[in-house]
Image (cartoon, rainbow, N blue to C red; front, side, top):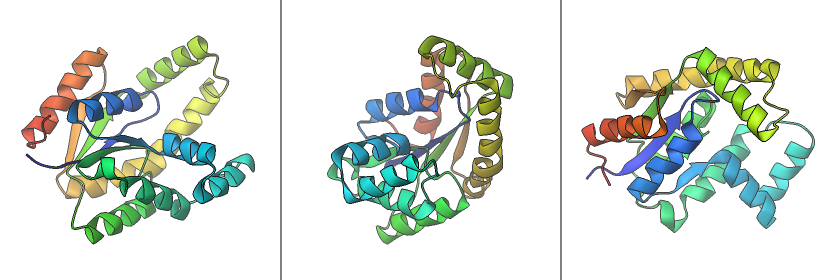
Length: 195
């Protein structure tokens, strides 16, 4: 069986958080979401968490070096030894370099990148629906469009790097939760990654 060192990528509203947790659970590996890792470090009052809190409180983005340090720390925990599923990292080319350096230092590499492909209108519709259901003020049309533009500008180029390595599986992200999970599972199985 191929080790499951995975990355799930998709625009906001693609369902990558939900699918990431489902796939990781099925494979028995941790889903490592940068947002969750940041929140847990802040809640636990770790040294890294204190730095993250100060940056977020100032309304700034967490810099790549700190983001990479926090992800490395998480991937060094015992439950991630057999594999992991990253969600939200790497987000740009600098972070790809950091992740590559960390993994190659352990004689490892990513084994697959799942790209959830969702039309822009679908992402906007899903996020607008989520905003209405959860009362999220950050999910208005203007902020959604801004986040999708950042995704297209910064994250899309990382997919080109992984495509060159032949590890990207494009998965149609439109359909029921179960249909999408089945598509991802089938793509991973074709690479020898199974539960």
